[in-house]
Amino acid sequence: MNLPSLEKVKVSGKKIILRLDLDVDEDYSRLELAEETLDFLVKNMAKVIIIGHKGRPKGKIDRGLSLAPISSVLGGVVGEKVNFVGDIIGAKAQEAAQKLPDGELILLENLRFDSGEEQNDEKFSKSLAELGEIFVNEAFAVSHREHASIVGIAKSLPHFPGFRFVNEVENLGRILDAPEKPVVLVIGGIKKDKVEYIKNFARMADKILVGGLLPAYFGQKNPNPEKIILAKLTDDGFDIAADTISRFKEEIAVAGTIVVAGVQGKYEDGIHKQGTLEVFKAIANSNAFKLAGGGDAEAAITEFGLNDKFDWISVGGGAMLEFLAKGTLPGIEALLT
Image 1: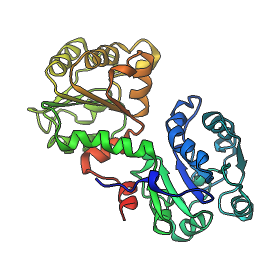
Image 2: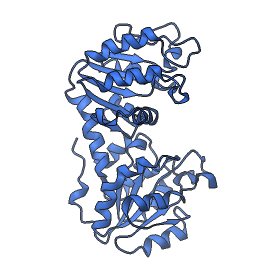
Image 3: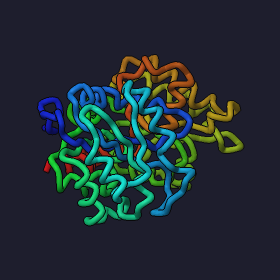
Image 4: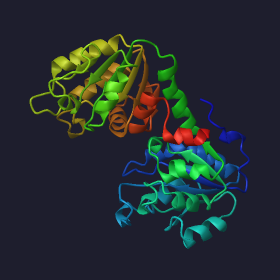
């Protein structure tokens, strides 16, 4: 996949609209993943206009979801002050973008305060684009969404992926191009939409180990018993049972490639973490190429101290699954056109 290269672009003195994944709460570590792109833009004296969203305000202003507190955190990441502008496409944002000096950064307000963002409204997209001269997408985690700041804006400006975005595509692409066999997908969590992904992955994976609350969504019917192994749950339904842990470990031990998406139980309460802990430790000790994605999986891996045992930890859960299922994302296609 030949994504355009940001490194070859002359960004000095240019107004760069940088889309970041800012949908974070108390753990701001994900923002550090944009450091390479931020450093590149600032060191090359670009005028950086940061945009992003937080939560689901549904097109209405919700001060509890303002991006204002994130400006100081971003400043710490890049080592420069990031001035917050409490506006998106209005006169205040326009003036701030117009007067922005070379090598400095501003952060605009939560994009989802305007309904045009999630609707991918053409007028909103163009108004957003008018603030800058070049668009950079460093928000892989939300690039499965056909939103204005992901696909709409790219129609009006020269567009490029951020450095982390490129690394995501390259590492996930390894699973699609020539994965070491057998390929084992370890999937869990509570989101029902993962069931459709499981059915799609039956074409790619050799085994799919299904935990969390997902087995309950299948009822008594396993659509592909030869490939899909549905976990038995503990009596309270909040963790996978001991015999399932053993069964999962058997498949993990012989895997050539392992993809982790979600946790196996309600690990965060401390009482129901046995399934997730034992399965993740088995994966960490495997010689397979190991890739994980999604907020809960990433948090559990970090809590268990297993980060350095994985070859790649994706910033996206839903985006990762959709990319592996379809081989592309709306945000990727927008950068290729």
